Image (cartoon, rainbow, N blue to C red; front, side, top):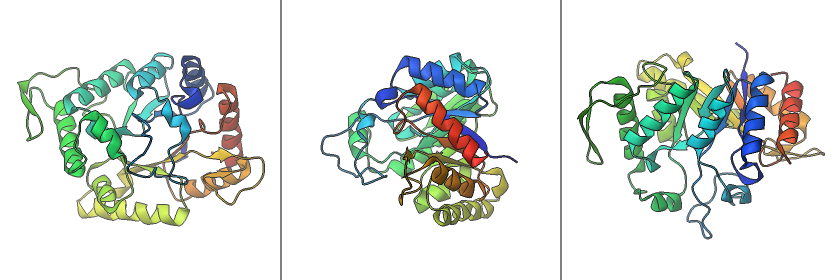
Length: 304
């Protein structure tokens, strides 16, 4: 099957703007892109406790302004009718599961069943502290959140007893438009994260990286799926590219490079059998029109 191609919808930095959001969402659909994606950042600490997991470890200045992902995705849903709508990724542990389940089910209903749920753990203990959520035990909390989301979306009435939260037997509606739930994709690169994806996810939210590393991690996911009696062919791989587009060749591909270099890496990633690639061009584009132009050039050069 052909590799699907999507875009990160305007959400942060100079693209934290209603006109940019509406323009790119509508144009992405009319130009035949397959999906739109939002991310999730809460704050930019002046002295972060952890290094940013990309580039030189410095948090990108553009992340200082970051629109709410639920509001952005709801707006994108309102100005489109076909294109899929994804989260890559929501930091699931920041949100009480019952509220997260309601927000996502609402977006799935309002978009007529176009939601792709992507969840992760995040990387910043500063953001956890600001959200009032313990950093310790975050993996176990994430597993419990996933269990609770599944129960809320599946059951009626719903009843959940967990040391972190309690849901008395209740009706919790609406359910998502996609039953039994929207596709559930998980992010992460650690052994524990890859194992979790293999055990219970519909897809892995990966990032642009050397092809050898990508395939090694994907092998771990597939092997875990098989050990748990799952068909690994049913687990999708969705790869985020967030390059800086340069006029001259770079040694830092896929982080930066010419359109031709980035497109070549996109083709190499596609050849591994991934299911979808999406482009986050907010770090490199000047405005919505430039973003769409770069997306078209990369689509044409990569032949995806």
